[in-house]
Image 1 (tube, rainbow, N blue to C red):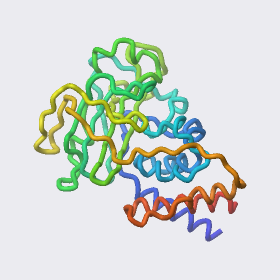
Image 2: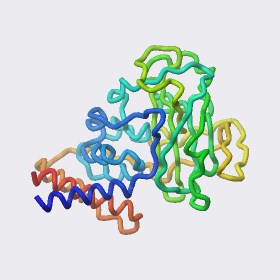
Image 3: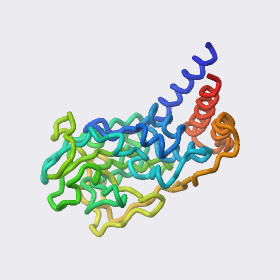
Image 4: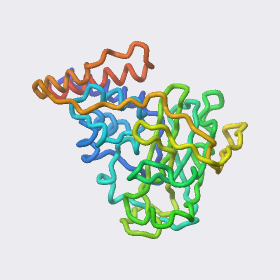
Length: 298
């Protein structure tokens, strides 16, 4: 019993250590059973306990899983979080409506960020980003207020593309290329169409981020970018171009040839502890192994 408690405590500390950014307003997608079925037990456990974590860390965990299906998980779209788990959390907006946005950032990592409307069926940005930072969460200045509290305006040229719940998300995307970590949150919404109305106020927010379509380069937008001299200033125009995260690896679903218990343990230990990775990555590796051992010890 004491050993079990120690393992759980360590896993909890690891979850806190690796969490760095997530949207708190409006209510974003959360992990659920549909995400678990598509992305596998360990990736789900990681996000269920630590939704603030980054996508590269999720991919590292998924590498050794036998129940991870890259195509079904679609991890670069909303971190694999599924609309099926969030049907009761859909905001209804009007074209031109101003939406307040709140982001909780636990630690700064210099990068770029934006909020965009993303079409979920193709994992592509509709139009241009609604807001963009060429310098975001700088380690030199720390996190500034306009990076965590800001507003975006729902475009008036969406037509019927976002009329049905599940068709579009407002996606916040923070790519901290300096440490090869990407953070993401999605808010389901409709514009003048069908869908459940969230219990939150429709003016409380939704926004989005540029997305890379499952291991493909992000689309380059046509608009010119204005250089941001300080992280206190955000551009309400699209960047001229954006760099894809350097880690875009996906895993192919494996066929289990061993017993379930053996698969669970070996899936965590399939790759050696990342000695050249960050402390976060090493702690995550240990936590994944401990969770697998704990599950089958009981």
